[in-house]
Amino acid sequence: MNDIVLRAEGVGKRFGGFTALSGIDLEVRAGERLGLIGPNGSGKSTFTNCLAGAFASHDGTFTFKGERLAGLKPHERARRGLARTFQLPRPFRGLTVIENIRVPLAYAGREAATEARAMECLEAVELSAKAHRMPKELTQVELRRLELARATALRPELLIADEAMAGLSHAEVDQILALLFRLNAGGTTIIMIEHVMRAVTEFSQRLAVLVAGRKVADGAPREVLALPEVEEAYLGR
Image (cartoon, rainbow, N blue to C red):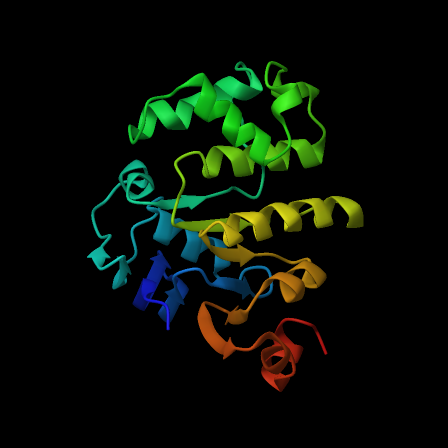
């Protein structure tokens, strides 16, 4: 059995009088492909922001590779091997595609920000031919690929792919899925947060479901999706 790379215990987050997360317990094993799903407003993005360090959780703890993450800033978590993508790609619009890759390499400081390493990242997402183009020249799916390249430049051990397929066509979804499968085959543990259910069920070995800030299910995808509370809350049945 693979070691546990991430453990969330009793994680809670409040915004004023609104409870966005309550008592979230979750374990992710090294090399696993976990799908985190739930309706809009269920707490998925809040959970991601707490894990990545954008928000401080009010309750509970995150432990990554045996180390508690409390107090660590996002870039410090990135240096430890925790990466994320964003729902809307956020490239540096004034930099070329390859310069967008050199930024995380330089900022996180794990390795020299070499042209060769940056190009390797672009080759992995099939963007090397557009290395010296500007982000505004990329298609939507190419921007998603760039987002993945930026997130994985430091070879993270855990990647949170936050709605990386939103708004893409069927064929484009397949392209992103293929990239995620390759990353996972190379040893990266992946948490997929996604509303494209075809992609989630194809990719995930396990599903966890959030509803109104609470985890209501966790298990094999087919079994989880068949649960009445999941069908009612998430699938609207």
